Amino acid sequence: MKISALTAGLALAASLGVSSVQAQALPIVGGITGVTLTSAPTLTGAGVSVGILGSAQFSPGSTGTPLVFFPVTGGSLNTATFAGSIEHDGSGLSLSSGGTTLNLTDFVIDTVALTLTGQASVGTTALGAVPLFNLSFGSNPLSPFNLALTSAGAGALTALFGLPNLTGLEIGTAATIPVTAVPEPATYATLLAGLALVGWLTARRRKQAEAQPLSAAAV
Image 1: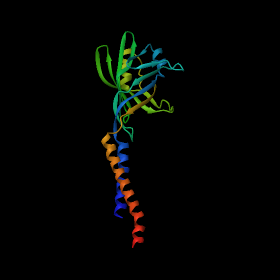
Image 2 (image 1 turned 90 degrees about the vertical axis):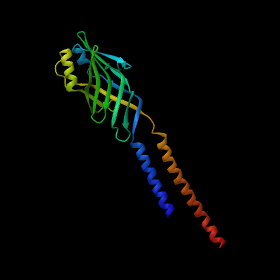
Image 3 (image 1 turned 45 degrees about the vertical axis):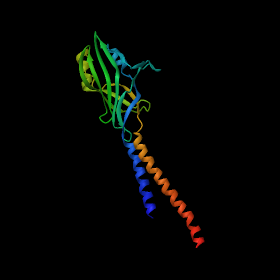
Image 4 (image 1 turned 60 degrees about the vertical axis):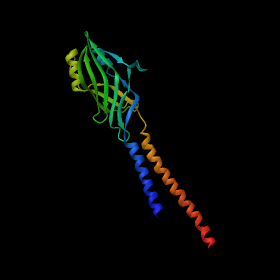
């Protein structure tokens, strides 16, 4: 009975250990975020050209809608709730019109607030972090996030390029595939040790059960 209770307790602890491994926040070590720029015709029609910066990669897209890919460079995510941040250092977009260029770099996706923030600069003048897009869930499973221009982002376009207020304009859709690190080896070691002990106790109980009839026959 004691062994059964202990085995059950260890099994429960092991299952809780699995849950804690699954639910912990893990650092992001790589990945990619792809953005489909459905707003490209609107921006081009307004005289604004779009370029890529740093390690961003451009594709014209099979349907004529441009795609831009941004390497994921850091952040962390809770593996159970997907809460966290996804960082894209060293890449970005440039928006140019009339000799003025707005650089937007180092994007950070906040999966809780559903916002995308970037570092903004004009020439050598840094404007700091600006919330650029609000994220919402769309119907396309291959690019599930809709990117809508925030009031701060729209205000920058109005101030620099003389565009009308474009707050809420859907800039495009996005899909992000961050890659997280595996849990700490110590976490797995503790879990495996508990599972090994459960296995040892189970084997011991089986041997005792097999030996009991032999003892009775000897008597």
